[in-house]
Length: 67
Image 1 (cartoon, rainbow, N blue to C red):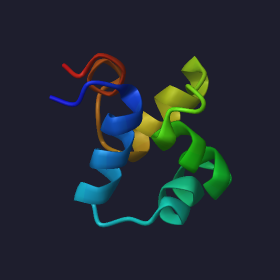
Image 2: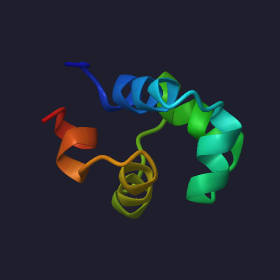
Image 3: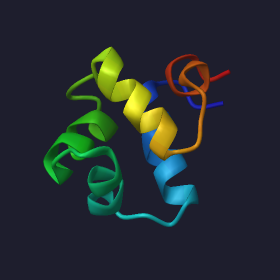
Image 4: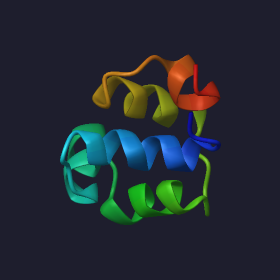
């Protein structure tokens, strides 16, 4: 289990074989925002976390809490 939301986002993206730009496109964000989320510099707001979870085919609980 990944310890932080940043690591869970990055790991889920990498498992799918996507570059940051692909996840950004699917969620409607800039690549730099995805990078900030994955590096832990920013935490996504709830609405963005929901979009990330959906794009990564995860539940919000799995993304946020690692469940």
